[in-house]
Length: 199
Image 1 (tube, rainbow, N blue to C red):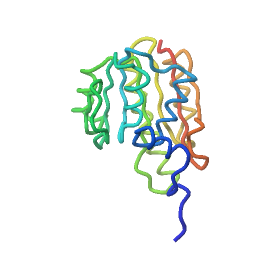
Image 2 (image 1 turned 180 degrees about the vertical axis):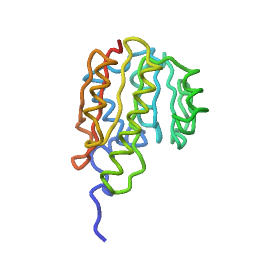
Image 3 (image 1 turned 60 degrees about the vertical axis):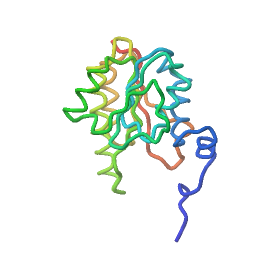
Image 4 (image 1 turned 120 degrees about the vertical axis):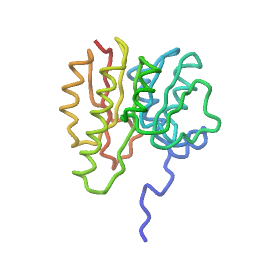
């Protein structure tokens, strides 16, 4: 059987493991934050689709500097042992009535970040549609739960209505743009939508 390039540990995967992060996705957030300053020390941050926990752990270690709070939510528990003291973890659907109410109770937020992706089927049309739905739900959360001047980062699969979502984000934020970090795999059709300075 042929070995997929994804079965091989690339530079970012090896680096993540050596630095104690569960996944290589940490370096996407690192680049996004270094170029756009999404999160600053002392912020209250919501991480949607947080498992296995690399974005949450990086936010704790490097961005809020132990002086804020991270609310992490995913269908699966975080793979962090121990879970950092700045983290409040909810396991479940962030968009369900029960979990959403808990997220609201912990807000409002200075930043909402989401590296969430749907379970993929291999059918590009189905996968991009599911990704678009996730992105739309996170934008709705941001409209309601971000503080004025707050920032947003969401992942979406290209071809999944990103232009329409960007158009909507430009009515919510002073600036909104698409961004592909260097840590995204070459063969990935993911892209990140960034909203800066909520009006």
